Structures are given as structure tokens and as C-alpha cells.
Image (cartoon, rainbow, N blue to C red):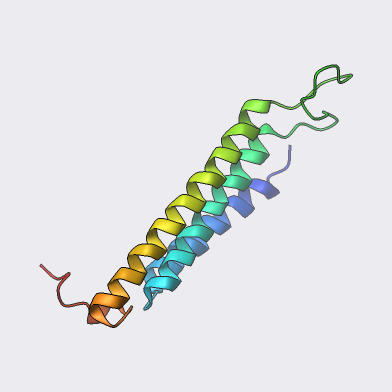
Length: 111
């Protein structure tokens, strides 16, 4: 067992969160959220990885990897793409109505 995939997953999550905090542009924020979520792909794949195991195909000789983890990773990718598309659509609507994507210049969002 190696720690490298777990460290990479944590690093991606931290870099994404740092980018969200430091962002001055809504599009940049959406990209940083996508980067943070990509850490979950690496984490899920590293959890399901087994040395010497083959793909979960029926009739494969020897040990096979867990197909549930791979299905969860694919589901995570689809959810991530959907969330990114939804957030970018919201950014487009904000840009059309407010004329800016700078969160500091959005007066109507302040309470």
C-alpha cells in the first residue's frame, strides 16, 4: 500500500479549496471547485486499486478489482460535470444581469 494516491487526493482538495477562497472571479471559482472534486476521483480509485488484480470482466482469471468503486468514480465524474455546468450557467446569468463576474461587485447578493 502506498500513500502517494492519498497525498495527491488531499493535495488536489487543498489546492481547489485554496483557489475558491482566493478567487476574485466566479468562473475561476467554478474551476477551483472542479479541481477540488477531482481529488475524490483519485481517492476513490486508490481505494479500489489492488496490485495484480485485473478488470472485473466475467471469466477473468485471478483476483479482480472491486467494480463498485469504479462505478462510484464514474458517478462522481458525471455529478461533477453536471455541477460544473450548472454553476457555469449561473455565472452566465449573473454576468448578463449584473455585468460582472467579480463577487465583490455584486451588490444585490449582500444581505
